[in-house]
Image (cartoon, rainbow, N blue to C red; front, top):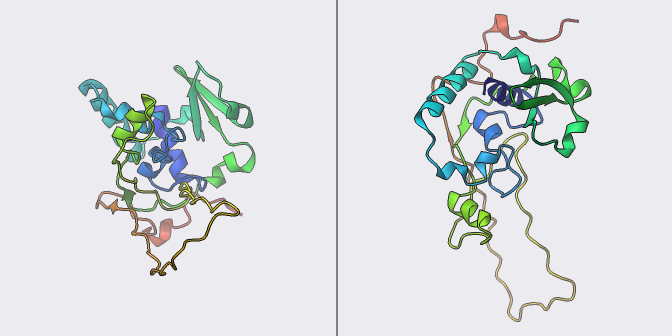
Length: 217
């Protein structure tokens, strides 16, 4: 559990992922089957967690957010159980095996310490899942998208999934019989976020510590 928490923190610091904790955890959860953490898009969140496990996870998360480092996984940004070997496993470098999980980092400079310097955003997107639980459960039952379910909010910022693109008309399709009045372009509302005074604010670093963690020339 500490290894997974460290992997999440590593992703927050890496420019190829969202620079918030909730952004990392719920990345891709607005589309079935492409979430980064399976619990966020497989209907698991419809179940109430057991109190002992929830309290244990809360303690681990609190320690990780408070600066505790779990060195056994190193700069890992990916992990999986020993029961499977995903196709992306060969493209990464294994950092360690902890319990039943195998941890990996990127190859080359993208997996080196100087790559982990993306600033924390300072505010979090509203926690997911971004695909409503009713839709997740319907998909698991093979019933497709649940009727009446509205669209889920999209993540913003670096590493966010791209929105779906509307399909273009087929060649030779008939034009509408009546002229279509143009409407003003709707500006999408920003994804809801929340802020907390306990969160580190990006950019608010004392001058004497501004270069902390950077390579010396």
